Length: 594
Image (tube, rainbow, N blue to C red; front, side, top):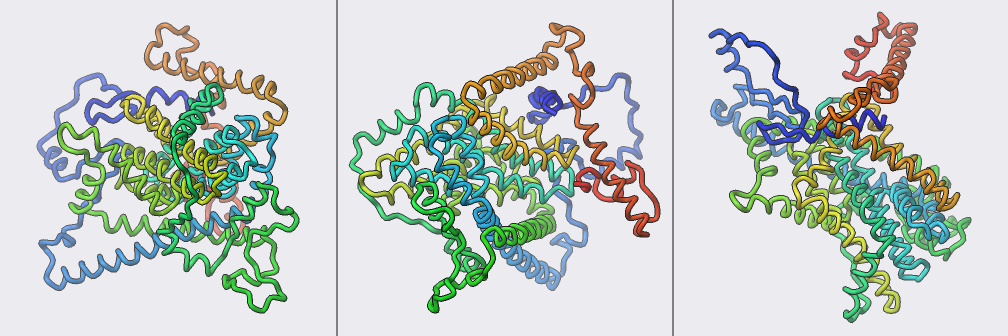
């Protein structure tokens, strides 16, 4: 699988001279081309222009009877009223979509919050930087919020349970783990191939930036303590005083509804991490004591006798159903509304650059906008998840999504700063220092991966590779989620428990192997003649080692087997072949099988 993905790496850096995008373009065909006849030219003029780039969505044209000039006064009134109605319904579904993300976060906290607190309470694990990084990833995946995991770490630093140096890798891992939510959201657009390609690419560009930034700055931090020294120098001359600061903007709107369904005591995870309470007595769900006649909790599960795990499973199922239902409705409504000249104007406005010499500032303004909007919603997961469907339908391009995502990384650090300001005077400095480490870690990553155009293309191109792969093999998205956010962190965590020597003994050969594959792929694309003939392509390897086709065929058999069962039950008239199986559902039977 690694070889297959890396084979496409260099293809993403081939520049299309026509539109300046970095896509893999086929060479010209040999031979003369017969000139089209007059009739053919007329037909070509009548047909709308089709963009061959799957990363650029075409805007559907309005039907003749829908054009404004051809409508009567009553027709125009109905059109305006219906558009307003669609906007109201769209806002309603968007509200429920954001609430479903809150429910999803609550579900994961109920299922894994106590375990996350236990992991953070293990000081031996946190003493290993690589182990701390993976703990940050896993904890953030479990609580579905980097803001929450960062706030827990800030509280632990504030209580002097761990030091700033131990906390920095955990914060880096939290940056990676937070992108799991919008990757899950991208699965909601798996039905249509190119929409899924763009949505998954838009979601994983966040992953690529975070992993690349960690790959550079974790070794630098371990070797030089760069972030610790920088933030210590910034706070050196400041007179710090405790501040009671709490900012709730979006939660003020969604809170009244979500609190009627479920209420979680987030402080329990922090107390477990601080070893302040007994785990056997810990409960995250706020429930009323049967003997308490004046209980103030009024949510749906306030009087339940179910355990946190049981409630968490119910909330997980409900939140996923609501999330994908709202996502489906939002995409359908946007498709029906974004047509014709208005849609073109919206798309051009969002993706346009400033004129003339100021064009280079466009991306930086997008970063600021992303940071401000993330601060408003108090969650980078909510912000990036909300704009991921817009990337899928083509309203926002991947190139514009990238700086918005970088801004979201900056905006989410505000939560940690606010949590630090609430610390007591003696520990305020350390708490604020780790919050600033989070901020400057993201700023340092932006300095590396955004200002230089070539460096900017690296995470974008990697995201396109993942998007193209998921477009061909839909099940790869689920495999990616499992491997990147669970398997890899768990394996590295296990190796870390075996000792630093064991981690290096396994990790260094794997790292060298990946680097060699990347270098060979670059040489295959750019300078194939300097390679031995056998290394000019990967055909000498068994097919499963450089292609996902064998695994796709294996999963496709599950689709055929399912059709056979339906046939035996009288639900299907004939057993389709692999090709007909693709036509029976979506164009990828393996995804249906999953």
